[in-house]
View (cartoon, rainbow, N blue to C red):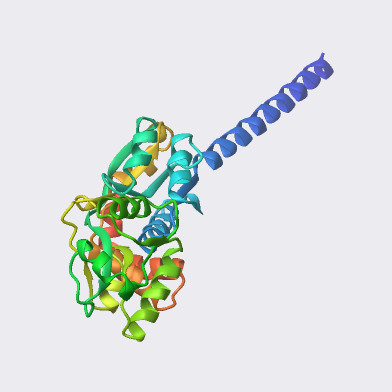
Length: 290
């Protein structure tokens, strides 16, 4: 009898230990899964800055954050179909309007993280024209070229629209943000005229004396806001992450500080860490730890 009881107790203990182990694995697995966050962004200086900052802010909450750079179309698609949990890189309502029209009903607009961000065609202040409408009369001055960025960017489509609206005999040159600013720098160093696609905030306005060309046809529209967009279900799946995003908001001065350090040669993650260290009060507000 005692032997049977001992055997039964042994079986029960083994069963309990196995169930317990299974529960621990499940809990660990669930916890690990809930702590993994994937963020999409575009390779614009401001979006590199904001994404590296929000990455490190969420890491303070214990999240394992992966950031992935894509073009604008892939960004919206990625958030819409859940490949990305969110992005802080949505320029709306103007620049990325076509992507919003395509995917907006599958996205959650969390909030603006930055306001009043104009964009358009920009020249050095020493260039003696003030309007897009004057470009055709000065085609030789600019070699009939507008220096752009990556072809998937909304500002590139806006510029194509401007070429059509103003009847410009110009070619829009696709490049990258780095390529565009390199050509802008070279032209300014040589005191040569150049016209580029540009937006604010951007570190170049702090480095050089630049001006937007007037846009009497209103092709580039009103100033954008930069929005945080999330995948459907993020608020329910990751309420803590979503809560941080509802408070994530900063100023042109804030983001300009990060971009300036990046432009001076600091790695984006280091520039973000420096800003976070110097702005602990604002970061604590985002974290809900005021």
